[in-house]
Image (tube, rainbow, N blue to C red; front, side, top):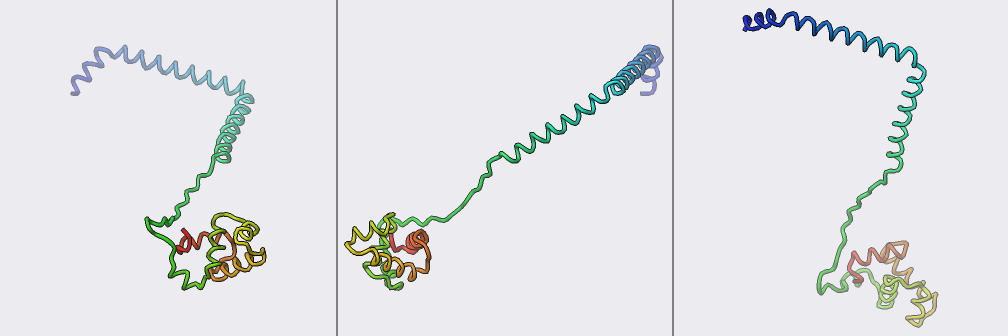
Length: 157
């Protein structure tokens, strides 16, 4: 192995030396050119580098602020199976009357108190009384809570 390296250096030594000298001179010239560039155009390079930093910062910030936030909600939805009807046992346990069930069903259909009163041929105050009693028995405060809980409990389909 040593003999092959020695024979290579003897044969091409002067070429190798000239190559190293030329590479060194080329490196020196490029370094001087770069130094000249930094000395004569230092303010322009400084301003350009600041502009580049602020441009990159602006791009990054705009991506952070304008990216839509994706929120994935997983929620269990109880779907009654075929033949699943009203849970009469739960209705009896809560003590909900037939008329209160009618009001609850009409609330679930999305009717207002006035529309429920007109459909059941009762006064508006009677509908309000029945709905407040249903809310109390189901321990809810709003119509949407009552509908959701009634569906989960199997009171309405």
